[in-house]
Image 1 (cartoon, helix red, strand yellow):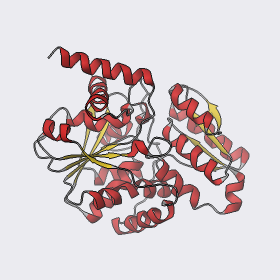
Image 2 (cartoon, one colour):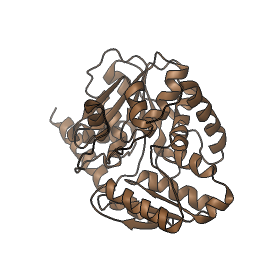
Image 3 (cartoon, helix red, strand yellow):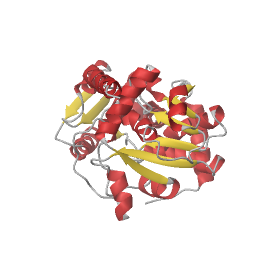
Length: 332
């Protein structure tokens, strides 16, 4: 484990914001009237699903790849992913002319596999979880001399994701609570580093699914642990945090105010709610923040920003969520 001060992180994130601006445009911040009425507090939606490859991960991937010297880019890059980070790396590699290999498990949904193929990445599909994909990526990095782009536990990636925090404060400077989908912790660490430095009163809540939430269990036990991956609508939140985690375990432990788990039924309801009430199709990993809001359990949220982190979901899952939501509404 290594540490940096919040001031050092703020400098890294500010540099990242300048570095990636050619490739990463600010995403919409939309006020949600229906959610605000449901919750009884102003709710804003940070819509990262409108990034070019459908998820926030482009921020970290762009910051990491843009720092590579030209001779390193020519050797190519490799990464491992539950889908969205792989999409981001493949997208940026295509934009920069860098040969890309993306290692994924057999659990990655077909919709993401097809998107990766369309971006021209070489795919290596191995095993039933993120750990097998990681081992494959390591072997390729060593054997082929490609740079391994980590999905979350990396300074450049964390700083890139932290640029979202800069946008949040510019768009909603009086934010009191930010709800952040939580997996390996790259996004949560970056956004938290920005907010705790620039607006320390802001409450930061990480949201994950009930099954296989590795960061939550690691923090509960006080050290990184491995958990088996289980089927979930929030497939982008699957995977471990690495037993030798260098950055995100410590940052999430120190900087997040709370971590909350939501059920599969709550995730599906949130996906349906966003589609019907907001006209937004998002994946389960993005909907976890709204799943928490729809519980209406916290009267001290104040002005809320809920991060919607991706749209890479199959039509079948979206339709099932809409149908289930409408069915529940019709039953009263």
